[in-house]
Amino acid sequence: MISALVTVVVYLLVIGLIIWLLTYLIDVIPVPEPFRTVARTILMVVGVLIVIVLLLQFIGALDGGLPRLVR
Image (tube, rainbow, N blue to C red; front, side, top):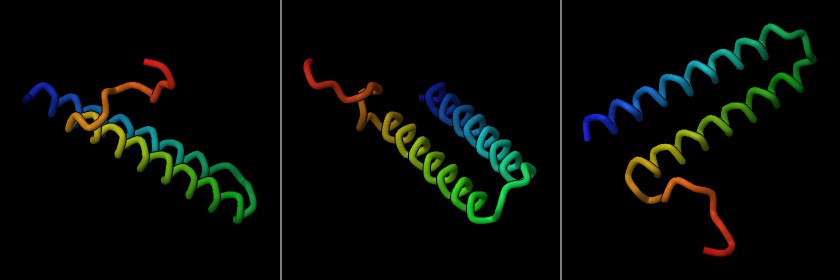
């Protein structure tokens, strides 16, 4: 159980670091403001969805794979 918690913490740190880096790059690249806002919003939505899937896998609600049509 402890190893699973450590794994989740490491995943969250890596995801947070990647999201921070991409947010920084979006702010540094000179693009017009509407595109920057849309890009940041999409980045945050994707990041939150990744964290939700990670937490659902941690509690066992997901089997860890993508949905398949045939089992």
